[in-house]
Length: 98
Image (cartoon, rainbow, N blue to C red; front, side, top):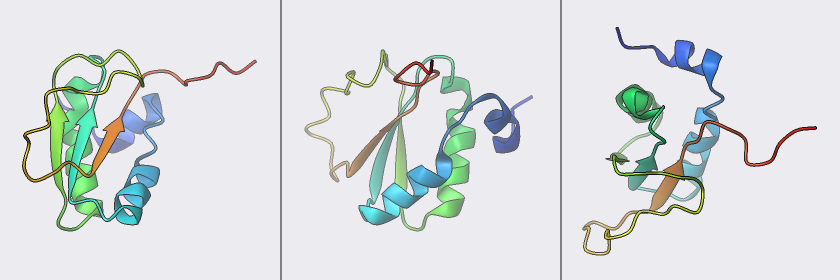
């Protein structure tokens, strides 16, 4: 059974409202979402939510590896139309809290 957004947000701080805000700020029309392996099973649930919150935005899901914030997908130069925004999801915060 697939999890709902509400169930996912109990386990992960996905910052979906922040993503929606950034999409609108940048007037993005094509957004690439990059997930670590643990979140890939929930990618379509996240896309469904983002599609509900944004208008006229197309989402691509990167299914190759993602090893952190410095792991930007390569080989997308020929993709038309242009990707306006890349959103990377992760399991952990970038900085530890002490």
